[in-house]
Image 1 (cartoon, protein in one colour):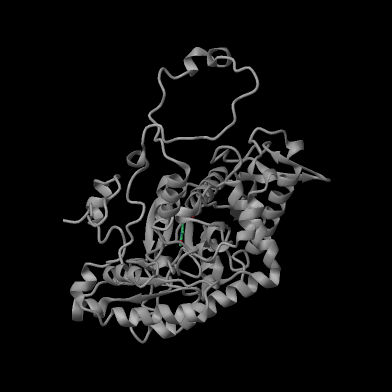
Image 2 (cartoon, protein in one colour):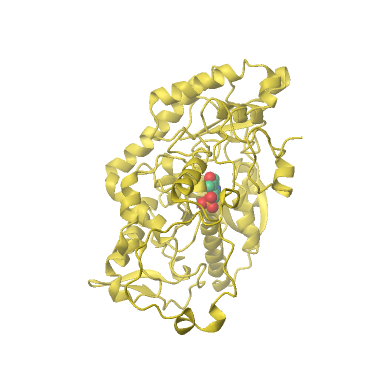
Length: 491
Ligand SMILES: *Cc1c(COP(=O)(O)O)cnc(C)c1O
């Protein structure tokens, strides 16, 4: 059944006078506004705000909140995004006044507890990464990439080396080349082998005294661990380059292997992925980076420093690249990550990864009954299936399957990424799903690939908006709510 709740805007629900704040009469003198505020701060007339009774308002937002899928409502196997369950305990703790109500300009002596927490988080991330120093400042994984590349650029500049290239595999996330470009480098794409790993011969061809950084995702976006990562790192280091580890897939290796140990010089974390922060529609992310001792002086200011029992924001770092973000960073996300790490502890984090890998392999083997998985003997925390045969034989595309899954009550997996797999369907179940959920998902795919292609091309059928024209939806978004039964994007 199509979900048609909350299809009107608040302004359409508004009725004049239907607004009752239910406050008692004021029993102290009420000076006129003009005595309280400068004249230019007072609006000439009242704003045309909607007038809606509280029950209607609550229903409006509650119904709106059910129109989208989320990890709290549905299985959300969005490959590369690690949409694991967000423990509510972490939300409660991050909402405590001592975290949520502090002001960015508050004196340091009044936020010692928060600074201590952030300091400990720096230490824990350094430990997990096997690297020396951490900056919590970047606001997302992508900004972590950019920040680390700026750090690398400052490092080479100080050494008087003119290195202009950043290398990244053809399976890399689009943010890798984008960050390289923004940091002033030229991106060179390194091929993958048919097995889906870095083609070392191709990498070697690009390694010279112009190559600054090799950006590698490990495990990579096909869910495969680069088994020769140490040899790769040795080769890159041998020509004077640095290794950047895209840490989006840390959920596969927590407490099992450390990027610093396999040769990474710098990396980012996605706490909103690996450490269970809500993301997507659920809130902002963060992108802390970790770097080696040699690169540490270039990290953004401030970092949290400790002197005896006192914690402070250290701004006095003459070789720093400077700030990359206003104030300190997305502290709320960092607090959630801290809670998550402390809740699990070292053994618990390792179990997280073991179970993430177990779940992915279980689902891989169930799904292989219905869709081929080209690099599919076993995987780390995610795998990439293909609808290439479905498309050739019955005209059913990866997009059709993804859209139809919504009707079955599952958020779609990532599709058409990584670009090296045709009709890619990239599935990451995470460790927080039960076997029953994984079975139900596999069975839904099994049914979908047997369905009438015409039905699939028009899917989803149960959502308020069915299949938008992706291009038109992006170029001419219809921001108005859609009346029940009609569909603003169709046709
Ligand atoms: C998510 C992701 C990024 C970017 O991280 P954001 O936090 O979304 O900016 C980079 N690389 C990979 C492989 C990712 O999955």
